Length: 300
Image 1 (spheres, rainbow, N blue to C red):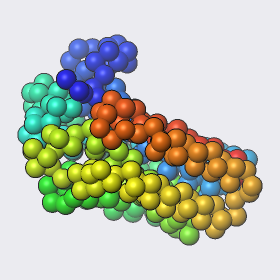
Image 2: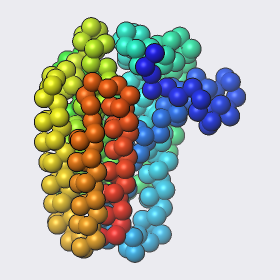
Image 3: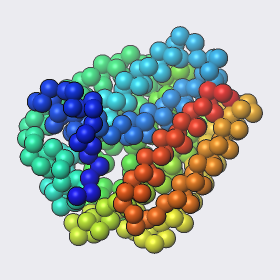
């Protein structure tokens, strides 16, 4: 069976047996989602601080809080997704082994776990300034509604891009207590980046999704997906360039972006839209693109 659950994960194997289903529900065996949620926020913090040497104690403190918050909120988002989709997940090969779909956890157990995660996220959010707190609360309805988008629109990946990249806005506001053009450009860039990489991700399930009535950009674009993803990636890169220009980033920032562009080109050349395992590998490599952008922001 094609599944992205890592049953040989050492972290989960080290946990008490009664905790393991919760760890799988939170996707602790697949940390790439934490990286993809976290990196836009870390990039914004670095840009707003003026790079590595401008971070200071406050900047690094916010950096650490965002790390913890990303782990918690990505886990919460996965639980919300699986609570909504437990019946649909049973119809898709890659997802039918998830704890709620497989019956390893009940709906009530998943809901209690979600409430605990949201409380932990709330405690972290309360350490931020008022603008960042407001942005955090504004993102919650989008997080709750996102799993329904695959039932209503061919563009659930676009909705994910709106939700997933609030950390870019929040990272900037956590440092400056305001929003400005660099944060907006970074948010838009990360939106298109997400639209690209989540279209790649959706190609794993396109046959099962079509049978189950699940909609996605992978099904909408079909054989033209590489063309669309190329456009999304190009737009993302240009918007990130504009983020650097409007924040007066130095030359090292743009050198980092050249490396990041090379990585996107590598992805598109290597991606076979009909290879499930290869598609997952290309999707996961987007962590490396995000790290290139982070290094650019720190250096620039």
